[in-house]
Length: 153
Length: 170
Image (cartoon, rainbow over all chains, first blue to last red; front, side, top):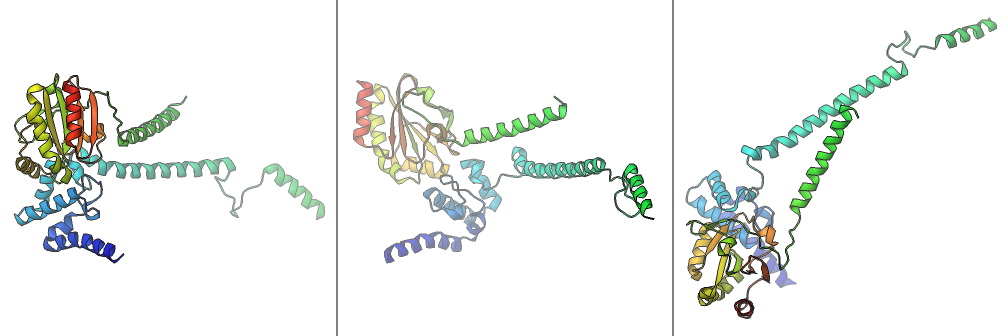
């Protein structure tokens, strides 16, 4: 049991020490995908993920910016190495479409709610409230009520 | 049918179609022996031109998927090179497909292990899906007509290579 715990500690310590030695890695680990396990680098200890970690640190030490490092990785692994699609070209649709769908959905719900409330009012005859704010009585019913009341006077 | 209802039906069908497409495109490809080997023109690892299985029609081809970070790939490398050197004059080709790897590391690896057979590169791993490759190394044996005749999961052994080669070239 102690041996297992020690192995787990060592496995966790390797990426942690790499992050400490190379601060760029910490900021990029959540933005890059491990190509074999389809998780972000920070969640993976696969050999392919470790290869990318080493590459990030090497390029950062050579003076590459975050963008340049990402570009190099995309050239080698394709856009799938990025955790989120780039905000340009066709990939921009991945950002725009969900927002557009959300906006359209909200607008559609708003229109439907207004229509339903109008239809409800016209069906119950509540378009014009009476002076006391209560629904007006049917004229025939009102006349009958007055006749009944007159009998008691 | 009113135009409104038609539009609603059309929208629902479009959503169902998109969901179906998403599910199908995410699904694992199935591949069987006897199927035509999936093929795609890929860039040569050293950048000089390109290659694909169809270039070797009429020959037997070992298609070996590998990456530089894969330890078993390193272990099997001399066996593949030996098979290529021994049988290339009898119509055997080894085609190495490097994938999910840094190109610089891959070139360094190929030089270290001394591969002289054709090497191509599919960095994004687009060809792995059609072959249903889940891990490296993975080796397929393709006959002269481009059909899959054998699949070797993991590191190849000398016996596995020899058995397939002797059966093919008999």
